[in-house]
Image (cartoon, rainbow, N blue to C red; front, side):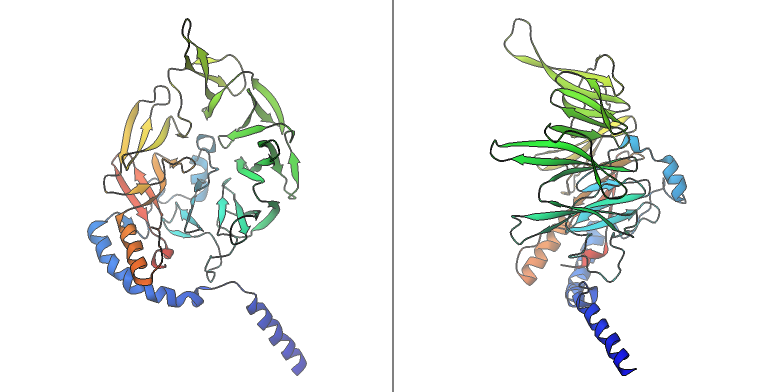
Length: 414
């Protein structure tokens, strides 16, 4: 009996020694910041009244998961982003290298990691380079790297929408995965192969099987760039555009096309055309059905960095340090509404892949303001070192120019 008890005790010690770091170990950090947080709470209430621990939009109130799924159109929004993604019920974002989930039903932001004791600093829900959502599942590209980031391994996981039941789909060499793309409930990836000798890069498309095995969709020796609206998967190989049907490429259009973007079953693109009698070239803007056919003229281009939702496109810009997000007519690009950050707030919506996402006319973006700048400065002064402002999820009502900044539990930590 004593021998059995000893074995149990040794097993327990071994398990606890291998356990991840937990919040209890970080309690000193939390308590150190508690006074500091309370000082800033007064500032926050007085100067920044649009910050909330919880906020449910009226368009989501009282609705079941099934009702939200029935209303959500995955073909109207590209859900594969690097800093933001969404499904009918959740918005996912990263802040401080930790992955979070905003529930549209209860209005609360929580870590995607389902372990309430984990400090999330080194689990698979941290250091995620991208995290697209298919609705039922979230896919994570988690990076394991050495100290100087000279090499790393990318692990791709599949988990439920709430972060539970993670399953490793595969581990890949550094830089081999360019982008994960959700098309319906299927997961595809753009793989990269670098030819250092000729200073060139080749792109190919693969599909993750339910068993974790990869299916090659395009020839690795070709260079094909995929794009999707969440329902249809297309690719550009050289000057030609293809649609993937039953995991096989079908030619849609031959000829030069740049800045391709999907909207309501059409591919919008541009190409250069020589001016008659002149040496310069002009851009010509066209569109073609995803099923093929003749090119159609359009009056102006869709902006490549824009986000499509419903019958509108949304685009973020920053001019002279002021960020604005505009709602535009897709045919003319005429600005219908504009959300201006006049309070010194900073949104990432205008920076390359840092695109906002849109649902039911509301804009979701990563955001920080002067409160976060002051808090970071206070931390740096008190503890030494450098502290960057922490990003939050902001929900923007472009019709009323109101914003709702949703806080999360990590806001009290350093």
